[in-house]
Amino acid sequence: MGGIDEWGPRVSAGVALAVYVIGLAGAFGVRAWLHRRRTGDSGVRRTPARHPAGRMGVVLFIGALLLCGAGLVGALLAPQLRWEAPGVVSWAGLLVAAVGLAAVFVAQAAMGASWRVGVDPDEVTELVTTGPFALVRNPIFSAMGLTLVGVTLLVPSAATVLALVAFCVGVQLQVRLVEEPALARLHGDRYRQYASTVGRFLPDLTRGRSTS
Image (cartoon, rainbow, N blue to C red):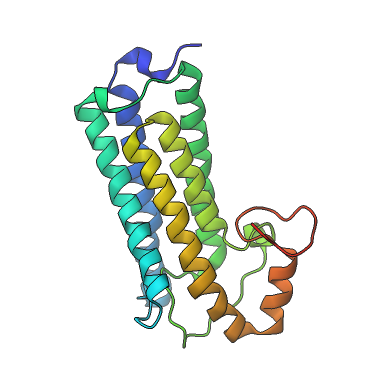
């Protein structure tokens, strides 16, 4: 089975970059604009300085997004920077990236007025446990990770692989050390019960305590 690269060495990089730009614009710019229009608030928060590990998570998260974008631009301008892969891999990458991107938008919409980027430890928002949040506790991050996996399959390179690793580490730090403690403090036993039966990033098929 031929891959997208059969149409030209830069085509898969261009497709991946287009998907990536649409994802960033939709997940952050458009979502923040819609949120402000509906609630009067952009939903964007800064991680408190007293959470250095959490701030490192934010740095890694942003760095991952920048590195991935740079890797895609680099592969577009200099195709030799990307690694060779079977044609089926590029098609699989496009499918995975598209599914992941759609899942990001669905999960963000499911949060409604509770959608936030970052954490304000003193702000009380509704605990969302329905829709995609009934499957995993952090479906937005899970879907973003899936999108990055797809982009990496489309354009495998040192930059995209490192970006995926940085994203995973950054999200783990942010979720485990900042977001989960804040939710447990705000929602108490209700959140702890929710966390005991719903996986962090992957569905908890055993219905036991999440270790994902």
